[in-house]
Length: 137
Image (tube, rainbow, N blue to C red; front, side, top):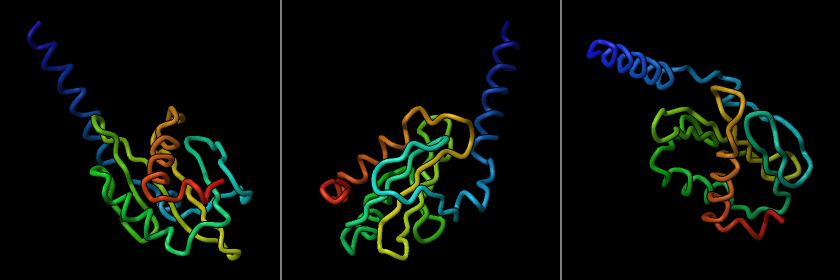
């Protein structure tokens, strides 16, 4: 019985290490997917928000809020990787402006098929904390 517990523990540790070391594809770190229409858009594994009338300092505000999140790092400008608390699953959030000046925020998972609404909840919190809630409507 004791060895079974050790084996199960080793499997969980191995899975945790695998998730933590899983490489994030370059396309996930730099992609700028549609849609382009203003508002919230449910997407496979995440969500996208387009804010056409965002303030000029919106990116700086979002950066401050994102980096205040203890599990979030920024591997490059406009890209944030947030890891889940226990298993450390990575979620990527991209922020950019289009040629017309609209702010695009795309938050999505890296591993799996469904984020269970986690990315939208985090993005709603970031928007609120950045003071952009009025601009999104």
